[in-house]
Structure formats: structure tokens, C-alpha cells
Image (cartoon, rainbow, N blue to C red; front, side, top):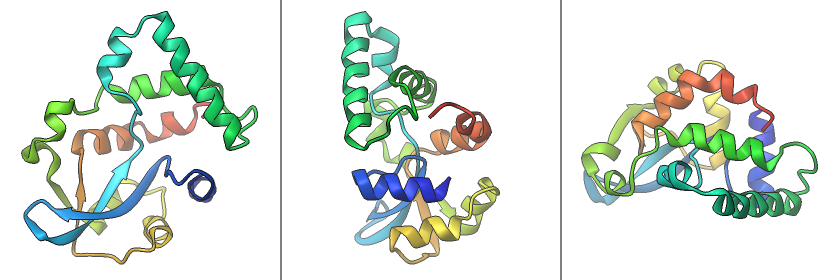
Length: 160
């Protein structure tokens, strides 16, 4: 699974499931911190709640085009990706919440993150990022991280 994520990242520049990155530390803007993130729906949760058939079709066409650009073939149907993102969107922060430091400044030790996902070799995920382990890592959406952890096996059984 992690190897497949690396291939997708090499082809598209995007990580699909879990990844580490580097960014500004919310507690001290002169420093950087290791970010940990999980898969996120591409569109705000309001889209899934309010999208009519025309908007949904635009999304499906866009997704089909992206799948063809990475030669994904028949590995996933745009409808499956839409359903997957819709389910994930339930825990996505709203645009207003995403700029609330109290909601996005969730610090974890690397070991805590590794324990949340015992079936995933976090050392390999970190190594693939090219970054070094730091004392603490930041998860910008604790609720999404916990949602993905809780539903990891369900997500991996999807057609995606």
C-alpha cells in the first residue's frame, strides 16, 4: 500500500493516503515542524451536501480525466472516488475552522502517530518524505486523522 502511494506521488506529486511534510510551527513562526496528514477530500464538505447532478457530473468528469492522466486504467471508478471523498468529508474542517489555530494545532510525538496506525510502517512513510524525525509532529486535523485511523480497513477495502 505504501509502495503504491509512492508511485502515485512520483507520477502526480500528490500523496494519497498518509504523508509527512514540513511547514511553519504555529507556536513559533521562526521554526519549522514536521506535519503529518492523512487523505483528505478534495472539496469542502458543503459541496457533497449541496451538489446537484450537474455539479456532481463535472466532478466525475474531472476525476476521470485525472485517472487517465496517471494511467490508472480501470483501477478505480470516478463514482467510487466521489463516494469515498463524500464519506471523508464528514470529518473535514470547515474553511472557517481550518484557520482556527486551536483546531489545527494538534501536536503528537512520532511514536504516537505510529501507534495510531500499527499496520503501516511509519518509518518508511517518513523516509519517503525525505524529512528527518522531529520531537513533535503536527496534525492539522485531529478529527480527520482519528477518522481515517478508525476507518482505515474500510477505506482500504474500497475499490480505490
